Each structure stands twice: as structure tokens, then as C-alpha cells.
Length: 75
Image: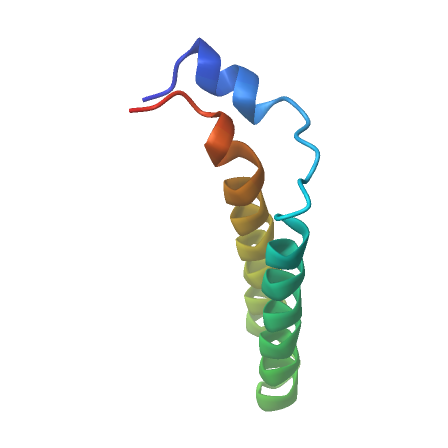
């Protein structure tokens, strides 16, 4: 459920903690590997571009989960 505390958490900068950096790195590196697999195994096309774009969105959403979730009100 969205509430004022959630909005505050979503739109506030949350600096990464020391424990978070390896998590961001792992997600980014694995996504890069998948992006290369997609690029090398699909023809250049709108679908290839969409697949890479969605993978980027997936990485950003995963990063948000790391950054924001601990600041959300408990459910």
C-alpha cells in the first residue's frame, strides 16, 4: 500500500552502505553478461533493443529494491 512514508522513501536519495556495493556490482555484472548473450544471439531488431532496454529496467528496479526497501514502512 502506498502511503506518505512510502512516497518519502521512494523519492529520497539513499546512499549505498558498504554491504550494498557488492550487491549492486553482482546485479550489474550478471545483467551485462545476459545483455551480451542477447546481443550475440538475436538479430538486430526492435525486439533486441526492447530486450536490452527491459534488462536495464530490471537492473534499475533491483537496485531500487536494495536502496529503498529497508526504508519503507513495515507492512
